[in-house]
Image (tube, rainbow, N blue to C red; front, top):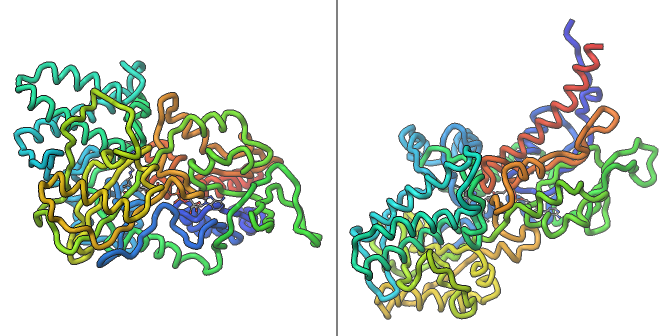
Length: 511
Ligand code: 6YU
C-alpha cells in the first residue's frame, strides 16, 4: 500500500531561513517551494537581491557590475536552462550551433593590439602568441587526472613552458620581447578569469577540475538582472527581508520565540538589528570573502576546524570592472577587444608593482560593448588583484583621467577626449562580498570546496537533524566562480533538505 504522508511528517512546515539573496539563495528558495516546503524566508543584508548579479543603468542601456556572461551556454548550464525557459536570451545564443561550440575557456574575439609606444601589432606577432597561450592553457588543465604535477602553481607551470618555447624562437630580440609582452596580456586576462592577483597563487593540479561547458559565451539582452527578476516573480512577494544583515547563526541549541508556548528550534538567526529568527534549518549563501573575514563570529558554536582550514585555504580574489562611455568611438566598428601591450613587460619577469604610479598597468585592455544600439559607445576595462583593489580607493575622475592618458598613449592619438561618464565596481570594499569569486589557491583543492559545502552537524540523524547548510558559488566543486555553479549549489541544498526528510519517512516505512 502506498504511504500517504502529511506535510508535518515530511517536514514541509519546518522553518527554513536562507541567509543571503544572491542566485544561490533565490535558486534554493525556488526549489524548496517546488518540493512543497511552506515556511521559507530569505534574509538579505542589502536593499536588493542578486548579490554579484547586479545590472545598472549606464549610457544607453544596462551594464553588468558583476556577472556578465553565461559561461558555456548549453544544456548542462543551469543558468542557460533557466534563461531559456524564461525566454530571456536572443536567437543567436539559443541556436544549436552556438551551444555546440567548444571554446576551451577563452572566447574568440576580434582583437586590436596597441603597444605602449603607440603602435599597432599585426597578426604576424599576435596570432602565434595567442595560439601558444591557448595550447599551454589546455595543457595546464591536464594535471587534474595525474598523480603528480611538475610545479605547484599555474603561473610557475606557464612560465616554465614559455621559457622553454621562447628558447626555440628564431626571431630578432625585439620581436621575442614583443611576443613576451603580448603573453603578459594573456596572463592578465587569466588573472581576471580566475579572479586572482597572480597566477602563482592558483594551484596547478586542481585547475582542470573546473568544467568548461560548450557554447559561445552570451549575455542577457535585458541584463543579467532579468533572470533574478523572473525567478523572484515566482516566489511569494514577502519571502525576502531586505536591509537585514545577519550577525550570527547560533546552532546546536534549543531556541524559542519569546513569549510563546511554541516548540523549540535548534537554530537561531541573529540579525545586526537585534532581531532573532528561530529556524529548523539555515542555508548559508554568503560569499567566501565574507566567511573568510567573519567565520569566527558568524557561526556559533564555531565551525569545525576542518571547515575553517578549507575556508582559509581556498582563494578569493578581486576582479573589477571600469565602464567608460564615449561621445564617439575611436575604435573600428568590428573591434571586440582592444588589448594593451606594455612593451617592457614579460611574464618571465615579475616586479613588485608600484600601485600609486602603475596600478593601471594591470588592465589587460578594453572590451567593446556590442551592439552599440543597446549600450552606446561603451568600453569595459577589466583588472584583477592588488591593482584592482587599489583602484577602489581612487575617485571617479582620477580613474577617468588616468585611463584617458593610457588610451591616448597606446593609440598615439593625444586628441581623444575624456569619456563622458564612468561607472565601476568596488567588489573588494563591498563589506558583504569582500572580493569577486573563488579559485583553488596553491595548497587547496576540490576537496576543500566539498568540505566548505558540508552541512552541520557532519553526521545528521533524526535526533540530530541537518541544521546549517552551505550553498554559493564557492561550494560547487566543478563550476565554482560562476552563476551556474551558484544556482546549482542552491538547488543541491534544497534537494538535500528534501531528501533528508524523505529518508526518515522511508526508514519509518520499512519498520
Ligand atoms: C558568471 C560571469 N563574471 C564578474 C565579476 C564578479 C563576479 N561572476 P552572491 O554574492 O551573489 O550572494 C550572496 C548574498 O549574500 C549577497 O547578496 C550579499 O549581500 C549577502 N550577504 C552577505 N553577507 C550577509 C549577511 N551577513 N547577512 C545577510 N546577507 C548577506 N559569473 O557566470 N559569468 O561573467 C561572471 C563576474 C566582477 C564579481 C562574476 C561571473 C561570478 C558570479 O557573479 C558569482 O559566482 C555568483 O553571482 C555568486 O552567487 P552567490 O549566490 O553564490 O553569491 C579554467 C578555470 C578557472 C576557473 N574560473 C573560471 C572563471 C569563470 C568566472 N568568471 C567570471 C567572470 C565574470 C566577468
